Image (cartoon, rainbow, N blue to C red; front, side, top):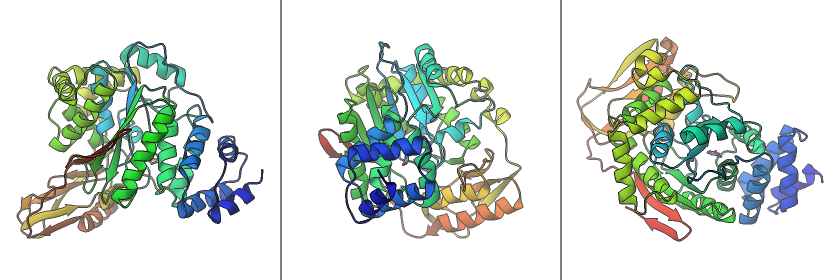
Length: 443
Ligand code: URA
């Protein structure tokens, strides 16, 4: 098989067969194919699209390029959640221990920041000592022992996806529906799940530009799950502006701990409860979303969710004092500079895409996959769309390492935040629910 011929066929709008996708995935996983050819193939896929059969074939090929978590012997259900990527989205940090505290095991394989979006692993690594690089065997033992684990993709789990993901980030080929679907589902299907909940982001901070494409992505991932006997529920959630108030890494851990205590911002709590309720129903511990929501709320109120987070942090080598006094444990920014409102009015927007790019400019995200990041920088938002403000009110704090960072942060906020006179109606946080039975419009 010649990769050059496959690239040319894809460039001309043709289709690759399942064995051809296996050849590509194996070649990526064992480094036998040159990066420049893989990059050309990816770009042809972005420009020409892929058929549903090709998406299934690429998913299976990437899944089979590695091994799977073997948790079939556990008596409890195993359900995970994954999002297509957002800004300020720290839901996984709250959700994994919360759902585990309610009796459903959560074997979570997460990613790092991609493009303008943040990554769960980067946030967790803000906790001194926290180890996200466990082997599959160690991850399986931890799930058996405490009911949850959050790890990164090692060479064992869909290694072809791991390499393609990095290459897509570097070649402008992230935003393609079939590639996103295959990437997410190859990792998730390697977790040996009995159910999966997906959070597909919509709006300016989402990877895909239109609702139609986001719904198509949701349907495609549901179909891929069904193909592997893994029921999938997808919620579409708004990412026009960041989730919660803290955007960065360490400060997002702090906000997650607050949410686990029941003190977090309302949008973070609402999205966590909605995704978590779907997980408990899929896991069979509750039969309705309402009952599941009550169980989750009780686990937060009783402290069980925070205690499970403490167990998770200890199990993965992190400093458990982060649960009691996050500011003492997490690296703090050198500078905290207020960003004031330039006029009286109503906050019209806080653009998630621009805020995400601003975090990278501050050093809290990566320009290249091998870059290291500064966990202490980011933004602490004080105002969100719809808030009425007076000139000079603090709209945000810029958390920076130096004066260049402060300038970069200011530029990002100048572009991200608009104040006007019109009243603002916020979009619904969760707009659609997609399952094997079809699409439900929720708002
Ligand atoms: N998350 C993933 O795991 N893969 C993508 O391609 C996009 C978001």
